[in-house]
Length: 79
Length: 79
Image (cartoon, rainbow over all chains, first blue to last red; front, side, top):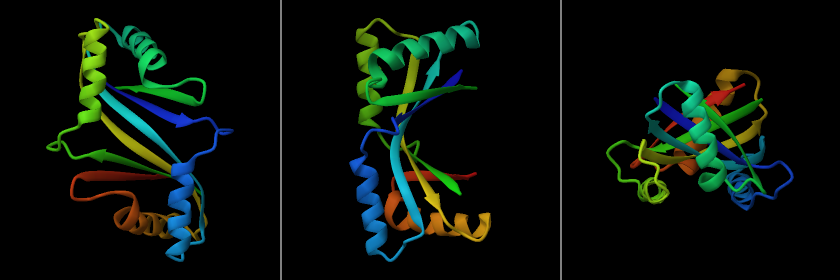
């Protein structure tokens, strides 16, 4: 199974990377794009008996290793 | 409109971040997760007359600023 974990900064957390992109765009004259936020995505192959087991495993590694749940939120997609 | 640009390293490009995650997982005893690749996602609000215009604008800034098309590929989602 192929899984994707999407990790985003929580809304209340400042995003300096997003702000840097936004100010670069303003410098290029692009004023109609706002509220830019940068996140990450992590894709992986996972061997599991079924989707539930895969989801449980990925949730576990996301909490322990991939995301910092103090400042980040995540969503998991399995196909 | 809210747009998301997903940026991934091309398949033939080495991904040291993905490899680092993979070896960390192996050290934790997790051997059923493989082929880990890390990418990024950039979310933004865009003002445009219609989806076509938004898509065109975002494609332009993605090529010029967000993605390095030599080593990265991207996809755009607008909602």
